[in-house]
Structure formats: C-alpha cells, structure tokens
Image: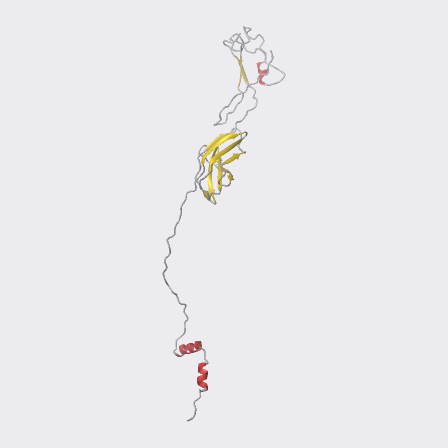
Length: 233
C-alpha cells in the first residue's frame, strides 16, 4: 500500500497567520472586521475623607507706649504655631481705616517699634496674624502719640490789668517790645503803688501778654507749659 505524505496545499494553509485567516473569513462572509477595547468596571470601598477646620487666631493684649521719639507695640503672640507672623496696621482715627506699615516675623515675635510716627499725631494700631494669604481678624486696638514740643513762642497781644494792680496802668512804655526777645524792652516806670516784692501784691502793676499761637492737635494732652522771662530790674 503506498505511503501518504502531506500535500503542499495543506502545508501552505498552516503557514498562513491567524490574523489573515480572520480577515479572510470576514471578507468571505461579506462583512467587516472591527477591533474594540475592552472596558472593565468594579467597585471599591474608599474610607471617608476627614477635614480639619481652624480659625487663625490674632495676637492678644496689644499695648502702645512712647519710647523717646518712637512708639513701641507689645503683645502676646498667637496660639497658632503654624502662623508666619503679623501685619502691623496703623490709622489716625479710632476704629480705622488702617494702613499696613510693616510685617513682622516669626509668629513668636512680641514687640515692634514704629520709628515713623510723627510727633503730635495720635496713632491707632491693630495687628493681624497671617499664614500665606490667610489673615486673622484684627487684634484689639491700641493708641499712642509722640509728644510735640512747640518750642519757645512769643506773645502777639498785650493789655494792662486795670483793677487791683497798683496804679492800674501796667507797663506804660512800649509794652509791645515784649513780643520779641531782643535789645528793646517794655517798661513799667513806677511799678505800682507799693514797694512790695511779692508779685501777688495788689499794689504792684500787672500786664497781660497773650495769644502765643499754640495749636493743640486733636486727641493730644498738654503735659506742661514752660515760661521763660527775660527781664531786669
């Protein structure tokens, strides 16, 4: 009986790639071939998200005091240890508006000196704690004013005291010479009706010099008045 060997046609068919066979089958059936990506869905349990809220705390106990020609601020630092520092704000009216004049760091800082305060102006200060772009509410308000010294001022008006003052005619000669400190002078010729050296004596002449042109800024307190008299007897 003759032996059987594979034919060349079968060997060729086995050599054709699988993809080509699929394409040939699709074409032979009069259809087309579409490749699709598989999509898988499933469910997984995710633990609940936890959000921590906080309010950035301002410093407390803000106080202002005058040190020389400057104003010093002292306070108790914020309780929030992640804070960056403080915004220093200043205004000339209680309750604001305020303008930021400086930033101080770190958050443990507890003092600041304002060296730009003008003498005679009362300033009102508040602080804000900050962290990045996050700001606290204002601290309590504190105020202070560097005292202003007017320097020596001369009078611009005068008048004799005409009752219970010697002969009631004051400085009879050139009383306006007392308006300026110089070589000329106002003169009381007879010095009254008594020889007492007590300035409170009703027997001595008196003269009033006034209108010194003082301007007291709003909110200021007069700490004292110095008087200088250049005279001779």
